[in-house]
Length: 228
Image 1 (cartoon, rainbow, N blue to C red):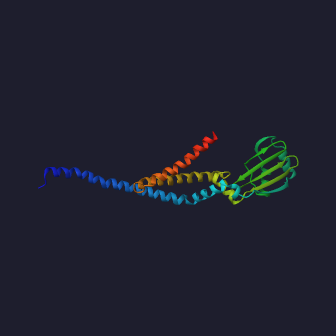
Image 2 (cartoon, rainbow, N blue to C red):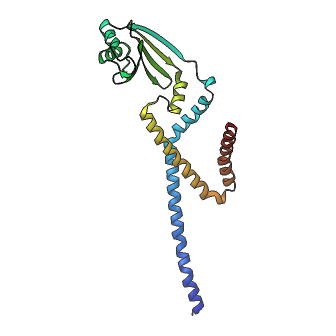
Image 3 (cartoon, rainbow, N blue to C red):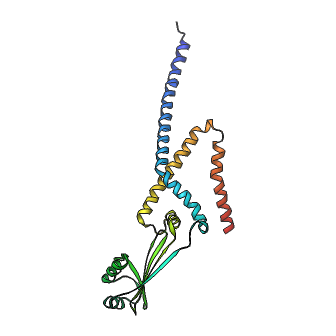
């Protein structure tokens, strides 16, 4: 027959024993979720991570990897009627080109300026269409009606460098960078969570994390101190 003290001890042990599987299930659930989001974010961001890592090197050493800009120039003459419209425009400030002038430019150069602002002065009107890795620019002589068209091209490396910084890349690319940055934050946060979960069995976890966080922080502090 079971003694009263043994029955009391067995009853008190049951809640503790029952809580162990529940805690294990919770830990297992969150571990699965962290693993899932870690590899999903890694898969989605892998290509862009490689792109941004590679262009970080080419951007940091642009004088080595980026070729000299290739510039081409053309000169055209506006028809007299269009030159007159240009001559009668505003004397200064920013304003769109007259619609017939913009249509003629688009037909001649495939340079769509409809709705874009040009810079007006007494002697000339200028407009530019920057793009990753280059620029297209127009300059109108308001007296003679001469049009100078220039294009510059810094090659594929220059275009990729501009995409890295978001320079002249458009609103859609800016949105894409925002989404990619969120994916990278998810990847980094879930990686940190996995490191914490497995840290007990991996003694180097915390020294490596401290080195990874401390090295750039110390460098930033030294640079700021040097600048000040």
